[in-house]
Length: 176
Image (cartoon, rainbow, N blue to C red; front, side):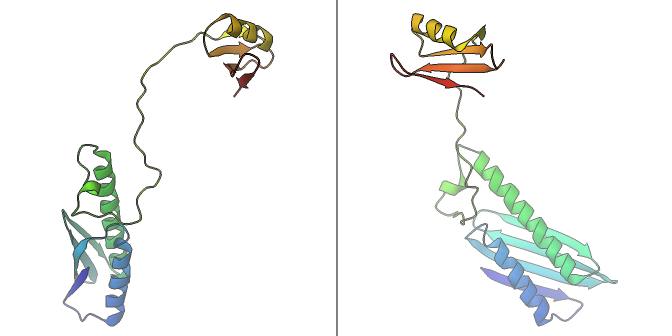
C-alpha cells in the first residue's frame, strides 16, 4: 500500500505524516489489496481541508472533511472512509449472485463479519392449534396419533409446550 500526501499552502510536518500513515494502517485491516491512498491537505482561511482518495483493485473511494484543526480533519476523513468501506463490504456480501469475496482479484482481510451465514429458507409452514391439556393427556394423545410430537397448552403452567416422542417409553417435554 502506497501512501501519498500532498500539502497545499503549508509545510508538511513529520508529525502529520506519521499520523496519516498510522491512520491508514487501520484501513488495511478491512481490505488487503489497497493499491494506494492519496491525501490532499490544504490550509485556506483558518480552515483545514483533508481530502482522501483510496484506490483498490475494483473500486475507488473518496472522502473529504473540513475543520479548523488539522488532526481532527484527518481523523474525520479516515472515519468517513471507514464507513464507506464497511458499507461497500456489506453491500458486496449481501449480493449472493456475484461476490467480490470469491473474486481472485479481491481479497478480504481477517476483519470479516464471522457471524454472517447464509440465510436459511423456510420450506414448509404448518399451523397447529394448541389444545389445552395436562402432560398425561398429551402423552395419551401422542400415543394415539402417528405424529412424532404434540403441541399443547399446559393447564398447570399456562404455556405452550411441545412433547416429543423419543421411543415407546421415553418422551421429551419442551417448555419455554
